[in-house]
Length: 517
Image 1: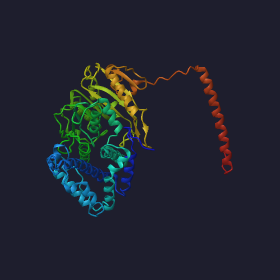
Image 2 (image 1 turned 120 degrees about the vertical axis):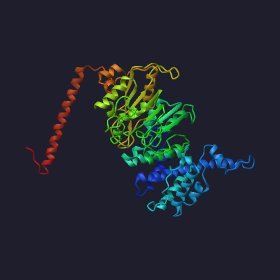
Image 3 (image 1 turned 180 degrees about the vertical axis):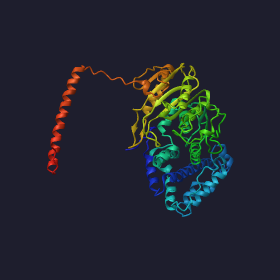
Image 4 (image 1 turned 90 degrees about the horizontal axis):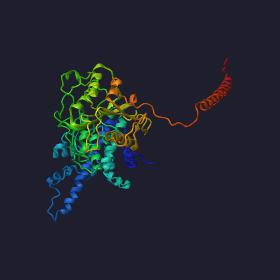
């Protein structure tokens, strides 16, 4: 049976490739092997894109005097220039040789040399002695056959699909450490479907491997837009993850400003003057060692200085600081952010609520993330809740929508859960119906539109369960007295069965010499 992903795609193709690639890992740690595999997929991708353009120019060589070796032809088409020693046919021809590691390292160095935007991005340690060259050669052959295998499944954009799928599988294989660079696709899709980044500046100050940006571009294209309708800005502090993001975006031809280097968003904000139309983020949960003691007078802390032992409210205020006047931010937070009562966090949350910035809160089920099994929530912050005729939004000043989705999702393995496409669509539809006033109605146990006064009465706690109440149960028409008689009779039968089983157990134990008084 084929596996289905949260985006409904058939994963028989990707999963089969993963199983084959994982067999070649041997005793190598998943975190190390990740860079070996993803680097090769990237190399194959840019080589394929180059080769496609090369063949096009070759066909025009005689009639239009096109030169397939003219570097400018590729730059004009937004295609990376791949020198001869880095082209996949050359690499695959060398795959059986013990020198294959050095061949790949030289190819990576040549690509960086010819394409300044990739400088310092690609892995270049394939020749290290600890990497089994026979397995590496087999991996080169496997990746070289991706397009052939994709045709069997009718898959478009196979290398992009495989890259994204492998990111998720490596995150699962690495466990807690893996989740630092990867946000589950269903969560990213839900954020994007809710804030709808059609056109404008999209910002993620803790962008991981760039999944928010990929999903945003998909959303634009799915709604009739095109690459370039949104301008992408990001930042990532982990050098390895920053390189993953650069490759992930390059493999999809998405242009993004991730800064000239990886850096800490709190201590060196590379987009200091940016005011974003859309902010999408999954910051590290409950980060204790963030250097807050060195930022006590930071202009971002409009609502109060965040505690030094937890960065949650530093992230929230950073998002607000970078939000344009009509912008909206959607981000993941630990559930504790909704109700924490420490003086500093309570004061900040109260100020944000009183300024009417909280648009919507969604409580998600547990087990969605590789980093933690605890439930998390989504915050949606906006500076402007007034009516927007262009998008059909009604005035929601002084109101906040609470959605309790903790009972949604389904297990995809023993420990991980996903939201289905139907559930993602339902949550997004409820939110947009509320924004538009288009047939929206509160649903007890699931969603509720609350006023600031309601939130004040709950002492500024934002936990959706406080507001949505309990789900209404259908009346089956059976009188209470009849139900009680039936339940009492059933309970009596269960007691009698319990005593019967107890007697059997005692007799069996007696045969073993165990006696009860």
